[in-house]
Image (cartoon, rainbow, N blue to C red; front, side, top):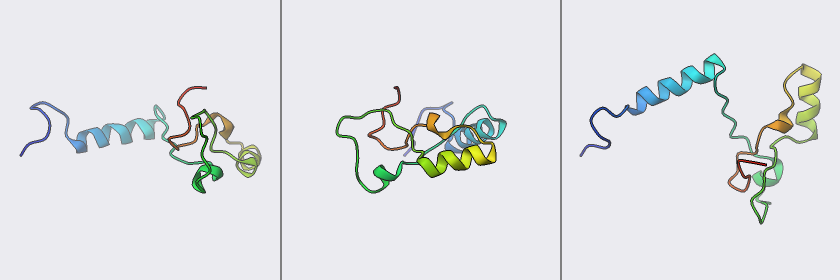
Length: 82
């Protein structure tokens, strides 16, 4: 049994393209969830929220990393847009 159509990219081709985009800086993948979501305390109405807590924000500032509050929580209860 075949999955997909002739000419479709294979899983490996897609995986290679995604990896190349991440390594080149053209894509960022963040599936990190906020502490509330990790412990099952989700928003009743899906809403945009960051995964970053106070410690994450402080660490980013101290180490010169980008502000993590701009990165969305990876849980289903975090809408993609604000």
